[in-house]
Image (spheres, rainbow, N blue to C red):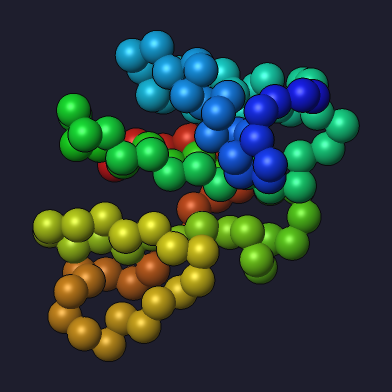
Length: 110
C-alpha cells in the first residue's frame, strides 16, 4: 500500500489525518481496517490520540508478533490516564491501581 511518509508511523499518521472526519473512533477503525486489507503484513500498529475538543484519549493496539514488545499497558489515577509500552515503576502515590495490559486488537476510549 502506498502512503506518504518516510516511516510506517509517518504513513499511518498521514492516513489518519486524511480520514479524520469528526469521529476519531471511526477514523481509527477505518485506518486499521484499510491497512489490514491493503498491506501485505502489519507487524504492529499502536496509536494514541488525545482529543483536545472532548478531552478523551483514544487508544488502538494491534500487533501480529512480539507481544512482549508491542503490548500496551494502562494505569489510571483520579486525574490522569497513562499508557505505556513498558511497565513504569509505581512506587509513588500517583497511581490508584496496578498496571493492566491492554488486549491486542483493542480500540478503547478513556
